[in-house]
Image (cartoon, one colour):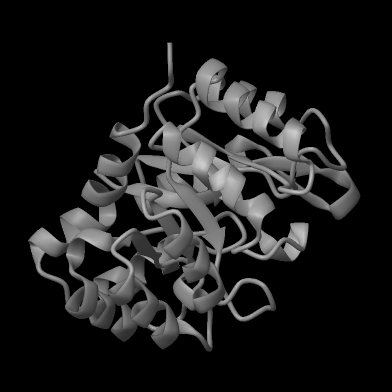
Amino acid sequence: MIIDAHAHVDEAVALGWIDPPETLIALMDEAGIDQAVVMTYTELPGINPAALDYLAAQVARYPDRLIGFVRLHPWYADEARELLDRAIRIHRMKGLKLHPVGNLSHPGSEATLRLIRQAAQYHAPVLFHCGDEPLTTPLQIAQAAANVPEANIILGHMGGYFHVEEAIEAAARFPNLFLETSAMPYPAMIRRAIDVVGPERVLFATDGPGCWPRLELRKVALAGLSAAEQELVLHGNIARLLAGVRHGS
C-alpha cells in the first residue's frame, strides 16, 4: 500500500494548469501508488470560488484513490474558517493546505495560527509548502509548530533545495513537525531525516502531476531504508495522521 501525501487536482484555466483527476490517477497507476492526498493549486476564497466544490466532487468520483485537503487563504478570516468547517464536516476532507507564497501570510502570524488551531480541533494535519522562498522556510514554519503544539504540521518538500538541513533540525526540535519528501532532490536526506527524527515522521509524497511520481518513488528506493522504514514512509505515517481526523457531529 502506497499513499502519496501531497498531490494536486485542479483545472485552473487562468494559470494554464489543467490537471483533472484522470491526469494524476494515470501517473499513480504507472508508479503503483494506491491513494493520494490532493488539493487545488489556488487558495480559497480566491480566484476560483468553486474550488472546494470542485475538489469535493473529484474526491467523490474517486473515493478509493483521492483524499481531499482544502487550501485556504488566512487573510479572509471568517470565510476561511467557515470553509474549513465545511471541508471537514460536510465534505469529510482530511486536512488543510497552506501555501505562504500564494497567500503572503507568515506561518507564525495570528491569521495563520487561527486556521491551524481550528484544524487541530479536528485533529486534521496541516500541510505547508516548505521551501526556499520567503515565508516558506522551515524555521518560519517552526514558529507555527511552537505556537500550536497540538497541531500536526507537515513540511511539504522538507525545505526544498537549500533548506533541507534546516527542515530536519526544525523537526528534531518540534515533535509535531513531519517531513514530506516531494520535490526535494536528495535521496540521502531522506535517510538522514529518518536517522535524526525517526521513521515515524517522514512522509512520502510526489507533488504530482507537476513532479513525476515514479521519480519521486525512486528517491525513496535509493535512500537505503529497511522494509519496516519503507512501510512507515510510504503508507503507515500518513495513514495514521488521516485516521485521527475527527469530522464532528
